[in-house]
Amino acid sequence: MANIEFLIKFYTHPITITILAIVVFSIIISLAYYKLTKKISLKKKSLIFSVIASTFLWLFVVLSIILCTFYEFDYLEYPLRIIKIVASLSAISALIFSLVISSIVYHRASHFFIGKVPIAPFTRKENNMVNEILTKYKFPKGIKFKKIDIEIPNAFSIAGSEKIVFVTKGLLKTLNSKELAFVIIHEISHINNEDSKLKIYLSVMTKFIFFDPILRFVRNKISREMEFLADEFSVRYSGSKSSLILALNKINRYYSSNNRVSMLPSIYAVQNEQAYFEERISHISHY
Image: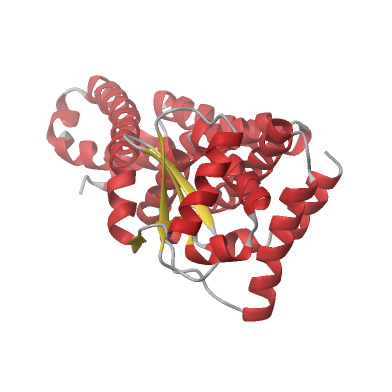
């Protein structure tokens, strides 16, 4: 590791202070904007920006320490030049690293989750119900539907190299055709907004940067805003609220009475969404 004197001079240099100050100020502004704005889509964008800025901040710090170690002896001869080089390389590398990680995770998402959940074929009755929904509602082309062999009622979607809506065996048993249609529309909204990309990205980054409270705060808040946006889309697409509210109430009653824990991939863990059920129902009712 670089000597303490070099690190102190690097992090107290105006160039480094300016970079850090801009990033921290951007995070504060984006979180303040989240609190002030009433529009859910803008709330989501402000939280996404704060995640990017926070990720960049920690990557910049880690990479700059590594580069300070590498350029430690050159610093003795060319102090100002080396500080500029370290600051520039750290900033550029942090940005590239964030983008590369996001891209890799995004494109591999569907393969990862298909391998993690027990896929089962639809029964004839279930297949007829899904086909009835597909005939009635003109969904975008290229979306696949898969059934998960789990009794817990839930659904989630992935938008990557493949666009897939997953529904559990328990959901197919719990909901009627109309209610299931509203849940599928809800999941298609997640696909349209590429929500799975952000969820997976946040899941990965919170594991790498586990000590960052901003990432954890934003991850929970973004999940909430994603659900609200998808609920609004479902209501607009169908022109009705009642079936979606009935579907949410049925799923909520199942969890309340059975006290079950999701067996789905961790970033789609149902328990994280259960806290939003009552708030989601209230939001739909007043939308």
